[in-house]
Image 1: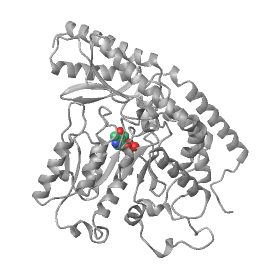
Image 2: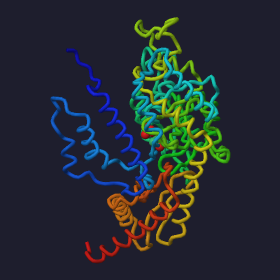
Image 3: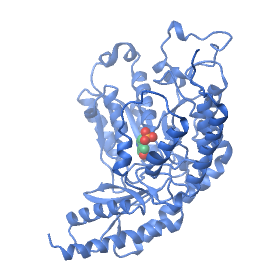
Image 4: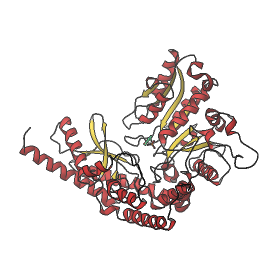
Length: 486
Ligand SMILES: *Cc1c(COP(=O)(O)O)cnc(C)c1O
């Protein structure tokens, strides 16, 4: 008797699968009725710390474990009042697309099969959306972190032909990268990982709108050159993570050209409004980048995980990641025939079929429906900013150029230190009460409740609820503070 992992009873698994689909549709269609977040209780945590299963159990029983210990304590980013960090909510059709991709179990690293053509199609659409020419290359990644690091490797190797073989010692001096002090930590992590070192990322100061001060960047580059450093790359921000600020991308492109530097743009979420005709002006210069990172799982609301990097110079992209070996040679015919393996454009050889959900969702909604939703989120950000400005106990802590609102409760008679502690407490109670899930940041030493709106389920009333709850909790705290003097 030989074994396989296929079900002994296909019909039973089919029924279980139908139930799973029904349960998830029910879960997603009723998400608004539940709290935005629930702490994992101890007994559920204990269920997640069990010894290694030795023998088999019924699939139906394993599914019960999921229903009781996993699903109820989901992060909450499917909820209409989730606005923490920058996270999308996914869609039911995206979930189904992921199921199909998993069913095919396609591995997109190499080979002549439909899935690689789906990813190539998605990449072509991506180029079109962001004004990159058809001759550009790109690859889908797990997210913008991997997209950024992929672009940085290409930029680094493209700077000097020998770096790929000889490493950084091929360059006679220390390579340096320039970007604003608001640049996302994942880009700096990437700079550390590819051997440049975080000290050699020059944090250029920002202006009062949190945009990079380009004239300071120019002089930093100049100064570095005089000291013998070797500038090779500029990172521009299309939507900073703190406040959604957009650097002057056109000006950064001018500097990069004049200095012979690679120009990369991190547009993880902030590149997306480029699909709106009325927002193109604010993102002017996005298409001038040598490389662009953006996420499909953030402001395109697609199911985790999927991001993308686009690179203008396809040859430089390929050169950075292709390694000819006998067991990966392209053949004339058969499964080993072309197209050019996607593994020549990134770090991974085995790659899942995340392209399928992008392909299916872009078809389902069309670019116009995405534009409408992004527009809706931009409007909601202005609406919340308006509520904050109108309320005498709420204070807006930064401009709102995009979809991020940073504010705090401020009744007017407290020190900054006390305000910071109070607003942190407000945030934790908003979470614990399951009302809404904003996140936080520090802006000029002020603790900000930070609302990043990449949520297709949010409605205006949700933002009104957030503003009201912030003030209510503020008052409750003030009362408690009086009752129990520190
Ligand atoms: C989220 C984010 C990243 C990282 O993207 P992941 O998809 O989480 O890897 C990079 N840059 C900015 C501006 C971001 O908001």
